[in-house]
Length: 254
Image (cartoon, rainbow, N blue to C red; front, side, top):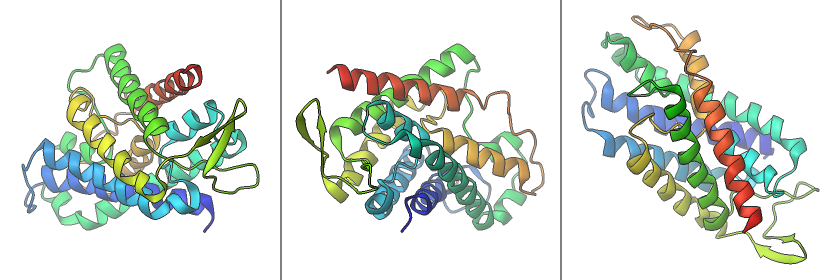
């Protein structure tokens, strides 16, 4: 499978699980109505697990522009592939959000609150303070990328497009994690971030997770939709990017 197609599919799987669990918890007349934050964080973690486990063999299953930028900054991914990966991830996010909308179409119609519906597609802060919101996303994404770099193999692709089991950094061979089982620690890492750091902003920690579904929110038809809150949309793009670069820089220093 093409790595680009794999990134589209992987990110769509992530959003189908993640957006789906939010829809199940917050929309009216669902089986999971009001089941809470623990259910939401587990749904997102399982989305990461399934996407990485299924698509990792083809593209590394970055499913997150912050992961792609972080790996490229650390010298573990080709810069020439960064932009195509980011486009694929954003497209996948849009597709995943559209599938959630189709699955819960009647429940969107049964829910009037505009903010509740937007929460299924994109993140928003509980206290809107842009510097604080940005810092929260930087911190959350920093620990995501730093953890990925040491816990697992998030898909290192060589010059010839080969998936590598080791790479050479400064003359030393470095192993690249646990193969397909890398999906498990990454999923648990995302679960921990959601439980510990998700409260202020909803832990986007992934620009494509926010931007692709936000575009879907703006384009899809359903009643009582309201604003897509584009005024906030730069935070879950810039914050994760900064956090990823800092994590990669520290990785190189260490």
